[in-house]
Length: 371
Ligand SMILES: [Zn+2]
Ligand SMILES: [Zn+2]
Image (cartoon, rainbow, N blue to C red; front, side, top):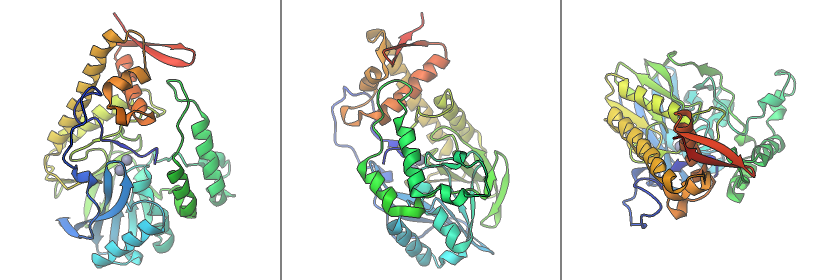
């Protein structure tokens, strides 16, 4: 799957470092059928996903007098759906109990089950107001009321994907496009791959009541522009989605309409560090953890280190392309569009800081240090 990615390759250093056997990361663990209460009225369940470096997505179940809200209900498709129904059953609930689906951001392992839940139980869909996937064809509908439902057909989605991947990357060169596995999943998932249309789009600071208490919406752009965290000040619970994960660093894509996604990510991480009274962080992958501020700082340092590697490398690569810098930043097994995209985000950040300048030669971006 090409657009949802976490970067697991860059935990320690550069491409020059030989591959050593690494301890499996907790985000890689296979999904279990366990149902664990991780905070009052909040249950952790896990749904299987199979992506590089990820073995499960946490689907949290938030209980209240009206039924339940679920957070990030897994991938599209019947297989994941069956697991979701199974986990809800183990927690003592049925699909009909779901009154709300929270989707932390626009990646398929997070939004996949949302539309079917809405369809079967009438659940509200809560996202940040900027929620938008690359499959979203809603800009094609001039008239929201007319054929809006048909626009999200498999053909339209395929066309949207083709348009998306037909564009050259902003740093030059051809896009790899989605994998055959991804296209197959999209085809077999059929209408379940429709883009969720949020019924409760939240803005930063807005309050929503779930699990018998009030949560504050925190817009945390970085991993995706539309990323949403929810904070419950009463019990100190933070739903962190993919913004802050316990042991891997979330992928930062350079492919965004925003000039400097890395700067936004830094801001969003600093915000995590600034929240008082966090007792537990509930990530979308991996185990719940306590030191949210410390983890956020660690991720900031990781990216600062990467920026330093680029600064140093730029002396040997006086007019390097994104690909040149990627080969310095990433191990060979990670080379590819994803690594290029993240490298591009770092180079553009240095350009925004005024440390590097960019020129184009035969369609490829080149970066040079500003003296
Ligand atoms: Zn994600
Ligand atoms: Zn994820």
